[in-house]
Image 1 (cartoon, rainbow, N blue to C red):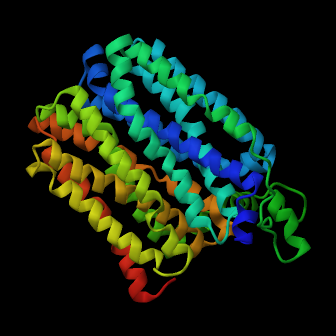
Image 2: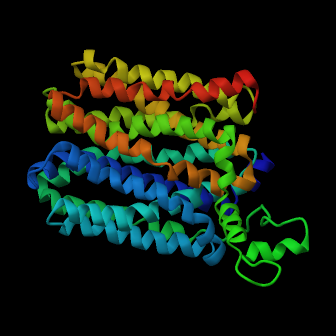
Image 3: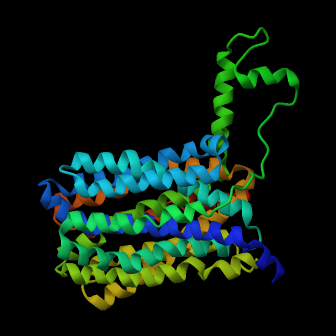
Length: 421
């Protein structure tokens, strides 16, 4: 109990609150854009997959920009980066309401909102990992509840805004709601990293780190080595990194596609826009429960994180594979609840496994590189829209996307057989 009070101290609570708020804002952004997708397609007279790619670009740029978290943190400190990033992200989000073409939306989301969110998300998780030890799974679960809250509220709220104020008014109001991220970032204190800067064994190598040879001239080899060390490129050669990356890749493909295309999918099946948006509530309820469903067992060592990931991935795949045969409200309530439950569980479990098998010293580079390899978001934005334009239905797209979490378990299974962690 004492350890719980120490970890959830004032600063620990603020760090958890920041992660929670970031997830709320990211969930609002993703789900509201999914609800607005059909309207934006009709407004700008374009194809579904083009709008899907435009909306997915913010995720792509956020993933790539995550690599900037380490140098920015070292130069400016966490608090400044979080505050400045929050302001820039909100500027980009609000500017969507004034767009006159898909290019304007792409620029606002891809150049302003996406990159800053990538940096903020990486630093959120790093701060959480540095502060929490015993109750890390619980803290991650509480933070990920934010997206569940967004899913619970934002889809019907966006539909209400859309019906009342049009898509521009809806985008402006969503941007205003998301501005709560700024004060959440402002109350977090700077935390010194628990790792030490990488240094060479001898003083003779200090010149190499600075990019100079023994004569004081610029050394290309030393400069390249310095870049590799700063970006921790060596982590890409570690099998344990690819275990957590592939788990994250499969989840990203599946759940990002669900957020973008679930409401349009139900509308194609004959559900009204209001009913389709309301069915997101079932996923939100499942998401809220799933964030902490494994936490008591993981924190107490009653079940291995890898076992929980395998169970959750298979269950998530099930909820997508059966989708083509579900055509009633009750059926969708059941499978969307399962989807939200195990998707949120995987988000928490992947964060915990990353810290467990890669260590606290490499959290920044681990989370940064996991986001930088962004192909999952491109697949999520392109494949369902392209398959719908080709077939006039999302059924096959949901099956194809849904099997990704299970296929991506292969490195984890190999790692368990080889006992690499």
